[in-house]
Length: 176
Image (cartoon, rainbow, N blue to C red):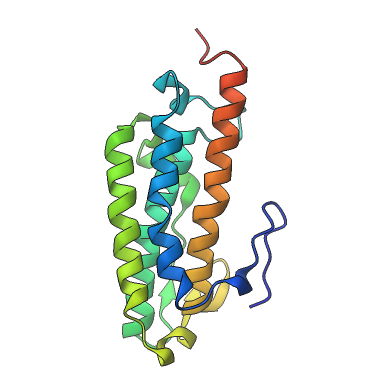
C-alpha cells in the first residue's frame, strides 16, 4: 500500500487482515471517554475555527465512515470492481446536522457501526482482501486498503476530537 498520512503519521502498511477488525472495534471506547469527559458538555458542539469541525461533528463523521465502509466492503466482496461514490463528507455533515445530534446516541451508533464494519472484515477470506472497488475520489483500491483507511479515519479523527476539546476548553468554553 505504501500510503502515509502526513498529518498524523498513520502508516497504511501497518494494517493487516487480522488487525483491522480489532482496531475498528477498539475505537468506540476512546471516543466515548473523550466526549463523556467534556465539561461542560456544550464544548462538544464548539468549533475552534471556521474550517474546523466540533468534537461531535468529527465523531459523527467517523460513525458514518464506519457505516459507509461496511457497505462498501460488502459491495466489493459481492460485485466485480463496483463503483463507490463519495460519501460527501462535508455535505453530509450539513445535511445530517451533525452538530445538533444527541452525543449519547452518536456514541451508541458509533459502537454499533464499528461492530458492523469489524464483523464484515472479520469474515473476509484470504482471497477477498485484494478485491477492488473503484472509488470516485481515491480511484481503484483493494479491500485491504479500504480497511486500512477506515482504521486511519478512526485514529486520525480521534486525535482531532482530543485537539478540538483541548482547544475549546482552553478558550474558556463556548461563546456566551
